[in-house]
Length: 215
Image 1 (spheres, rainbow, N blue to C red):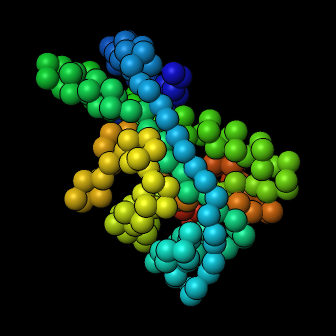
Image 2: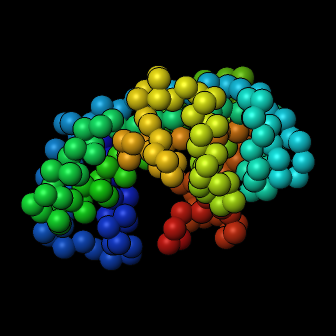
């Protein structure tokens, strides 16, 4: 499975500066091991969307409290709930490296973080291509725990999508996901085309919640 080396290096702290030869070698070694073992899965479905108040949004019949989510969905009249994971093997790889090589473990964390983001982007690109035929455009992903949407919203999102039953992601008592390299999100669908996150370098909206770090 492919991943962005540039993004992995960003997770490792190499922002605007070149990585050393040892790090690049580890990146390739760990990247090959990760690509060989991950088992990516994803699910999504469309649910109902209704604005209740300025901070309460009813999604699939469940009210989620977040002013930022409400603002994010202001141009959307449809919504998807989404989940993706790299599977349990990703966590096993991190544990294996952590036992005897902390440098490899750190690189594995970064590589797998970049990998799950790339996988989510690929799935969303496919959804976007289909929806564009109907005149709809995808908004960026908005996840529980981001901005003012409490992490506990994971419980309701999991229930909406039957995530544990369908792709095996579970929640801890503190609403962290296992496997750890997993993503859940709300994705608005709008008839107004929004910016692409890849275009942050040329965008003048410096207050955008989805602006990439370091730009």
